[in-house]
Length: 381
Image 1 (cartoon, rainbow, N blue to C red):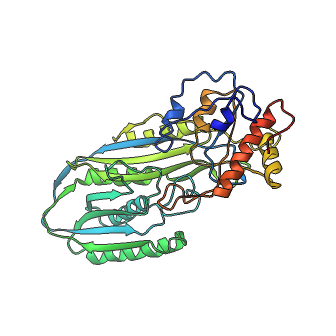
Image 2: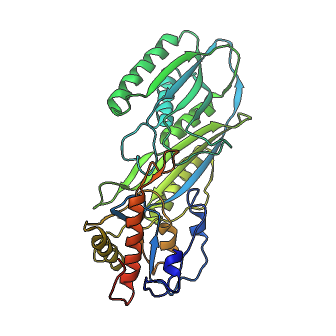
Image 3: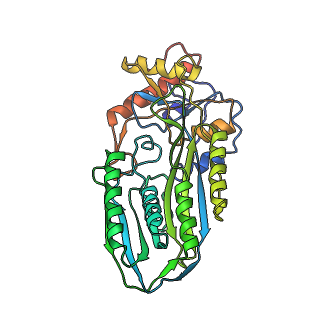
C-alpha cells in the first residue's frame, strides 16, 4: 500500500485512504466504532477475502445472546442412581460456513435425550450439564457448532434397563437423522454414589423445556442464493455456574438483514423470559445485503481488472460470516463495497497458508482497479 500512496507512484488515482481496523476476529469492533468522515469517498475495498477468483459482495451480521436461568437444588433421595450421558465426536464446525450441512448439535441432542428420559421417568432430575467449546479463560466460543455435550441425571433405582433402552433408541435415530455424523458417539455410564445435589424437578423441567424450545440452525433463506442461508442461529454453549445456582446458555444469531437479526434475538429473549431466564444482548453488528449485479460499478471494475490480469472470470459471492463490509454498510450507506483477497488455506488454524502467486495476482488486481477508477487511460500492468 505504501507503493500506491507514494506521491511518485505510477498508480494513478483520485482521493484515496487506507483504513485499518482492529478486533476483526472478535466482533468487528474496530469497524463498528469507526467515526471517520468518509463522505468524499465512493468505493471501499475490504481486503479480507480468502479465495482467489472470488470477490465477496455481501455478508451476515451477528449478535450473541447470553441466557441465565436460576436453578433450585436439593439433595437427591437415597434411592436415586446417577448416570452420565455423554455425546462426543460430532463434526461441529463453524456456524457461518457449516450451519446448512445438517450437522448435529450435541446440546440439542442431549436436551432431547433428557426429555425422552423424563417422559418415561417423571422423577428424573438433572445433576449437571455442559456442552460446547470454551477458550482457556472459559469464555464461550459462540461461532462453533457444539459437537460435544454431557450431563448427569438421577433416576429411580430399578429404571436402569429402561434408561439403557432409551439410549439405544436415540443412537439409532441419530444414525438416521445425521448420516454424516459417522464419528458421533453417545455413551451411558453409572457414576453413582447415591448422595448428590440435584436440580429440583421444577428446575429440571424448566431447563429441558428451555433447551428444547431454543432454536438452532437455518431460520430463513434467500430466494435467489442457495449456497448460504439468510438467517441462522447457533445454540453454542451451556454450563452450570460454580455455585450450581444458574444455567448459562449462549447463542449466536446471524443474518444479512439487520431487522431480521434483531427480530431473531427478540424471539430468543421471549423464549428465555418465559422460562424465568434473564437475557443479556451484547451489541450486534450489521450485515451487508448481497449485491451480485455484475453491472454495479464497483463489481464491474473488479470483474474487469481480474479479467485483464488473469484472463479468467471473477465470481461474485456472499458469505454467512461477518466482514467489515457489514458495519461499514450501515455506517456509510453511500459507499459501494466489495471484498477481495489472495488465496488463504486453512485460515484461523495452525496450518494457515498464504499462496504467494495468488498474492501477486491480488496485488496487481488491486492496483489495476484503483488505476481503472482514475482518469488514467493507461492502467498499470
